[in-house]
Image (tube, helix red, strand yellow):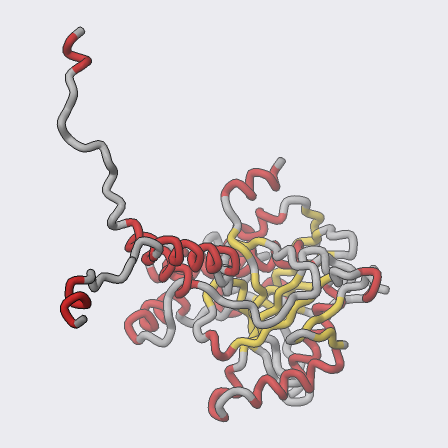
Length: 188
Length: 160
């Protein structure tokens, strides 16, 4: 008895292993949703009661005004605009003001963007314009840090080495994008 | 002519012994990258595209709000709605929802909570701003508008 056992092959049949793995693979392929946790980050202003109500006098020349109405039409610095992709370059010029134009910002630290929407404005155009506005600031920061803009955005601020590059780029220029409460013209 | 008829003695089998290993490697890749959905999304989600995207630094601090037109319009109507976890909420309920989400976090990290908004492209700003006002009240001021990557192809299409 013992001998016959010893003669039998002691191998596990592994031929169907690939099939089992295939089944599992297909299961995960179907259920997988590759995480898309990326987007535009933003910090809201604090509640009105907490913030001391300082009547800030902002000079007209420091303000960069963008408004979108309920029909998704843009008004940038008092003029109608159809192509929102131009906003980025306009804002860079406004903030940095290389030619010391008296109508643009006095200095980069004082520049403020005022972004106003209507309740009926579509979310898509809001994101497109916000993307342009943030893009302008990231472009300025990245140029100052001397790295491409993609790299600047990917900097991890909890890593001290990358934090230093981030601080060098950002310096004392705040990303001053003020999102005003929407008007209610096109709303319900 | 005879040159073509020359037969080689080498076997023509493809060795398949490594196939299970390859499959297993793929399997592990998908097992690791997979995120199983905890909630069923009941609103339309056609996420807009943007270029200036940042990654969320710590995922454990993120709570999601889904905003869009309900998929079952005959039951919930065609007006955009807010979905938190797996129920529809009104803007005024967000205060309570944020408090509950904060309770899940460690005490020291409660102020660092990030709200990720997954909003349908066709939603209007009215509902977004209602949500933002409530989030300000709840002192959850870090926001993330989830977007997809804008490719060069999309740019060309938008110019046409």
